[in-house]
Image 1 (tube, rainbow, N blue to C red):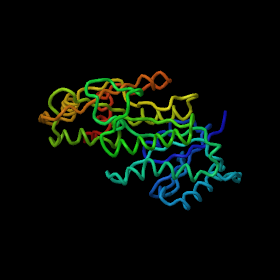
Image 2: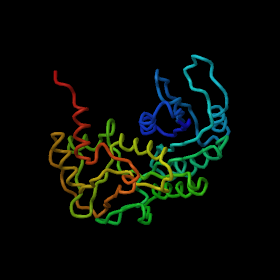
Image 3: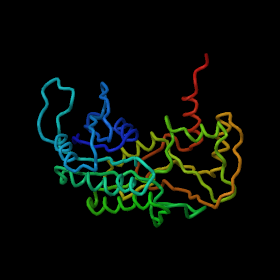
Image 4: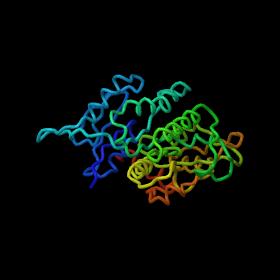
Amino acid sequence: MKANTLLLVGGDLCARAADALDPHAWTCAGLRRRAMDARPGARIRWRRADLGDPDALAGTLAALSAPGNTASGDPEPAPAPITHILYAPAPDARTPQAYARAYPLGLRALLDALPDPDRLRRCVLVDSSAIWGQGPADRWVDEDTSPAPADFRGAAMLEAEALLHARLPGRGVALRLSGLYGPGRLRLPDGLRAGRIAAPDGPGHWANRIHIDDAARACAHLLALADPQPCYIGTDDHPIPTADLYDALARMTGGPPPAREGRPPDGKRLANARLRASGWTPAWPDMLDGYAACLAAAAPLPP
């Protein structure tokens, strides 16, 4: 089996994607802004790195990918050239500057700092359906739908995608995720339980979601997929009207029925047909089942 050395840039999604890969075929190293404590048996060797410091970044990557052998009994795998990248950044603020740093500028800095870029076989860039902004309402959106970012978030992601494909033709893949939910990502049902969130009233409001473990498996799948398409949508099988989702989650949590709030249509229905056709299958094809399982797992045990 071909040896692969995966560099992960990101947090929880990257850790879950590493767990979805065959440990006998993949060696994993990760970069984060903040230091990570080493855990016994952890799949990823985390390094603290700042994508805005090119000299330090180049030194970190050189140390990760330098050839050599570890001594017998050394818990860390032998360094090897980086063959794959999973780039899933998390902007540290909701500002144009933070999104530019995380997406086009950060990706450019990472690719510029690779000590042996010709050894790179695949780079998966994780961004989001913000590429399409708020429409087209009530129509299905797939990978052939023309991007139309409504704000700086989608514009920064689209710029990063253009950079990815220009720098790594045939080796770069963009994964555009819908809204993530899962363990530790239950603010929406928590807010509905407390009665703090209103549901949009009227047609043209759609909710698209993907369980974080399904998103992680999509990342792992695309890292290993032969001859991938340039981009894929990562979402479950069943977008539903946003008000229906909010009503269902309020019932699941025992919260009050959410109030209705008039808003202009802002929804779109995302199609996952291309990702499914490539061989990926979601464990949670319906967000209502996925949320129910997450809420049951998070519920406190009875005394």
